[in-house]
Length: 143
Image (cartoon, rainbow, N blue to C red; front, side):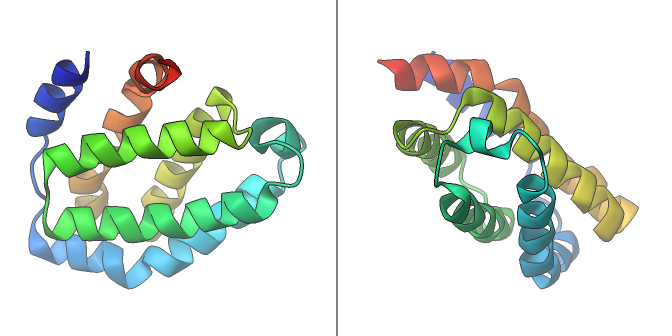
């Protein structure tokens, strides 16, 4: 299963530098808006676990920083290993699988609003890859 993840991650292409830089210029704003929108959900405590709003906000910032770095120097192995670590670690703290779908979908919506259409076109496939592979991340980190 992990090999399948890696093979699919290898099909993603490093975005052109101009779009990676555009993302990096806005990554703090994206993270802040993600935290704001997720915190305003009525079901947020159910998604992240009791007392984990601060951890969710850290995750928003870390996601932006990680993706910004990844876009500048794409490495499929690092992408896969990091996503597996994130799933295992945050789920151990009470985050539910449904959180990831909601979180990444919301992040993609914010990117579509804040980034140029060209940047979104090149960057969204990485977020789509995460969304599509949530069930596999779950299976691999349940062991």
